[in-house]
Picture 1 (cartoon, rainbow, N blue to C red):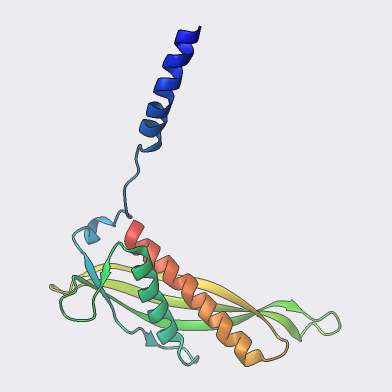
Picture 2 (picture 1 turned 180 degrees about the horizontal axis):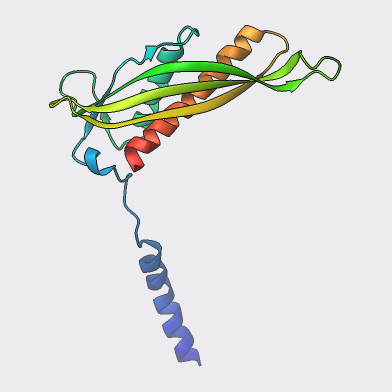
Length: 171
């Protein structure tokens, strides 16, 4: 009985190491068309919404997210393998909660940020991938409404950037 326990104690760590590493890879797996790309340039998104600075927030958040992920190296020049281009095409506000006394008066609003983007091969100008992302930020209609809207837009921009970066790195 002791002999079986000793053999079990010896092989248990080896078995755990072998079973725990099955199927894992360092870094993300890129979509098939983006496998050879190593550097990416994030172009300034165009802003077709009525919110100022919306495109700048999305562009900065996407660059930060790609840098944090580490699958691609960021490039600012013509030496990039791929380019990410896009546009902020819609920002809408939805009433999430209203006042008990007046149903037309909003107490909580949702800011819906919609973005279209595409990944372009920098050498051949071929569109490798095109997609869209949409996220919601929430804010309360109390106190400084302008600061609340700006914070909700920044939060939604980070969520959109995370969604785009995950699509680029993991497919």
